[in-house]
Image 1 (tube, rainbow, N blue to C red):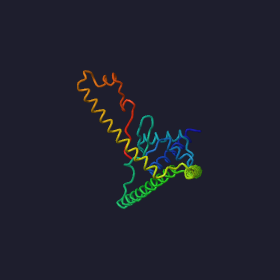
Image 2 (cartoon, helix red, strand yellow):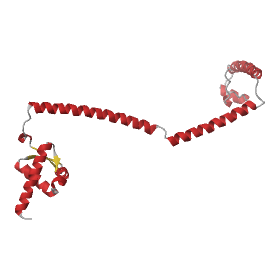
Image 3 (cartoon, rainbow, N blue to C red):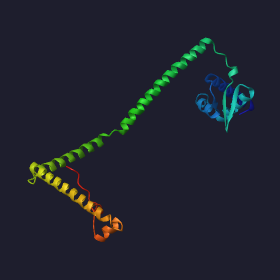
Image 4 (cartoon, rainbow, N blue to C red):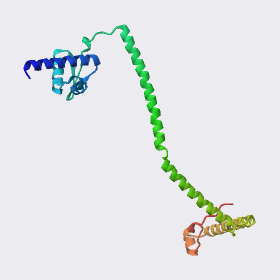
Length: 219
């Protein structure tokens, strides 16, 4: 390609990029601008980079460097000032878009909550397996209940009451005898020169606590 054609191509790329940046009025990197314009205008990446650098040098666009990346955007002072009517229209559009954004965010939250509920719910195969397991449990419990009902060694209410009375009697006697033994031992220990533990070991006394025996509760 001759230098004249290269200059013409470069000028065409610069014009396209300048118009695009002014129309969009937002920052772009060379890679973003190339990706957005390559298909429609057939611009190569090298041509885009070179045109943006030329525009920045000429003052057509502004350039900002962030680390290793350069960002280009239209010079705001070269853009026409918006009229009051245009500003009101823009403010109205911003309000409308803000309302749409809030509605979409609320819809997204609703859908996320619904998705969470669905993910935490059991699937149809899981429910089927759970129902089958419950049916087996019910059948097992029913069979066990029938065996209990058909058994002949049931305890009658009279027998149960008799056992409860005997338990209360033995419990009262146990408590009475334990109290008597404790009082007797305390009286002996008053004149015993050694400790209670040593006395029990010498005499061979074993307590309920030594064997982990606990008096049953009242029924």
